[in-house]
Image (cartoon, rainbow, N blue to C red; front, side, top):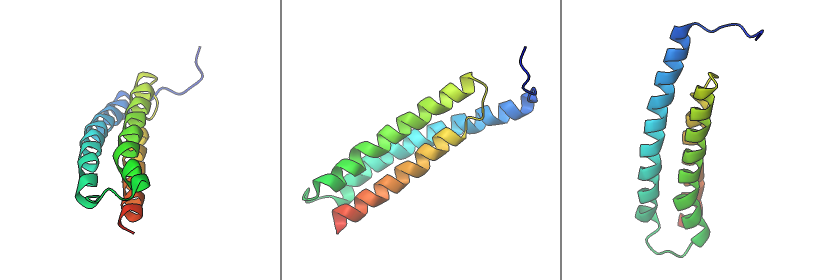
Length: 102
């Protein structure tokens, strides 16, 4: 028997809805950031900035999506994983832009 308190079904439903919306938003953001790199790195002289801007945000998004799905299956608080993926993707993209435009 589990000693964990049972969460109300409405709390879990809200988490599912928030997680699904954040997953959809994070995938759209990752696609936008991927193509956004080509707007500020037109010369291609900063390979590290280009690499960080192109590859890191989609990887972080995939990790956030996988973490959110696993947490949903285990009935844990799940919306924090895609939210963290979004925030870390934006941060890595901003750092990549700073490197590439310097």
